[in-house]
Length: 72
Length: 286
Image 1 (tube, rainbow over the protein chains, first blue to last red):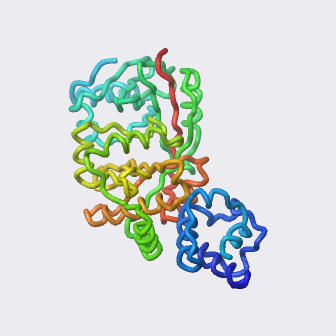
Image 2: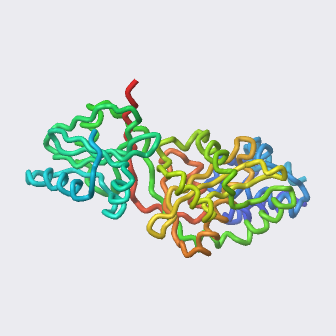
Image 3: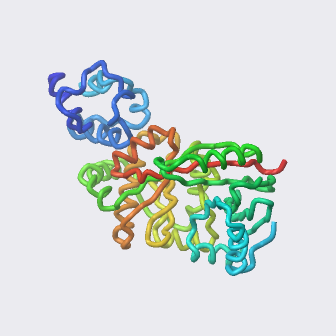
């Protein structure tokens, strides 16, 4: 999947406007990054990428790029 | 401290303070019916001082202090065998003159401001709109061996210990419940938890229902399960179950400096009421 498509999925997940997210963005700077977003990410990776992640994996994430790397 | 014997005595004490005609400060927000309950349960005490009356509600691990004092006179509060909490609720837009007077007086008595909390309120039906995502998540969680269940009586102590050990929830954030009340709360499904296959508790939430509104909701998640999505599941399940019982609103307080909690409550559909409260603490006698 192309990076742009993955970012679209994340924008949809964060419920932010298209074009808001860039790979170098820090998650702590994104207002929508909270427990609910973390739940949504676990779900997205499971459903669309067949990847099981947990809270420990999420705690290690710091940028959008870190999430994109998980989407490989 | 003297124990309040009945509601008439309580009313008379307040009347006495107001009789001077001076401006009286009070942080008594409890309804008369609630006061009557506290007095009946022998949990209410009082002390007179030059400024008026100080009421003490025994909350088990601490006393919640209610003031009814003449603003122009000096207030004297001495430390007790339990921590003292004064919660002063105000509207953010309100004049802060009274608050400054109170602050000065409390500092003089040895109190310190432990925190500022913001009042939040949610309509259960609004939180339940998150259902499509959370229902899917719950199915996935179940596949992985985690289940959200209403706790049974055998889980009470473990849930309380989990909440006690939470680094954010302080002992003075939890209101006193008798063992009998807790028993009923559990029977009513107000103790929720997420357990693994071995029935080990990974996260838990407690609440009480007062005047048809859920209050004092506390959620604690074991360190190793943080960011696992369990807190939203507990909030959602709580709302679903309350709604089914005819309880449509949840009230709560969150710390002003707890950004994660503020974000979380907003995303779950909670609204800020505009009320906040300073939490003033006087440590117990050594």
